[in-house]
Image (cartoon, rainbow, N blue to C red; front, side, top):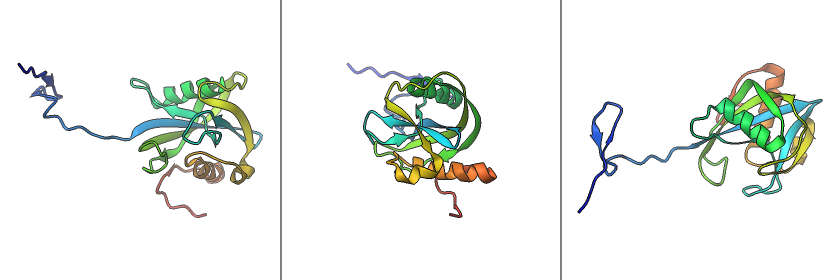
Length: 168
């Protein structure tokens, strides 16, 4: 005997799981740029992909969480710092930016409110890197481009995204 479970859709019509289309959507993440004395806070990744590379603090958005809440939580988990957003640098959605799958990130510019830096969660260590020396580092994902965009943002403002034409 076969049983079908029916659900109600937005317009209250019945739909069976067999008739519902499965979507493969990008996964949302957040990152945060924290700067102090021309140095940017980076975490050294403990896990693949990009194990032992530097990246901005950040991670996946949990269900039921706003991106702002996710940014604050990820910063606390990885750096032990309480941070607050002051702006959104941009949205980066290149399907090849993460080797695991299609991941979209919202990049915040933040300020440190309190706490002392201590690596946690999937961060092996925390390093303050001179913004001018980013090119000399092994940086994960597309975070080098994000930091170039941040450098430009500091000079002239604006918002950035993966396919934005840049004058560099």
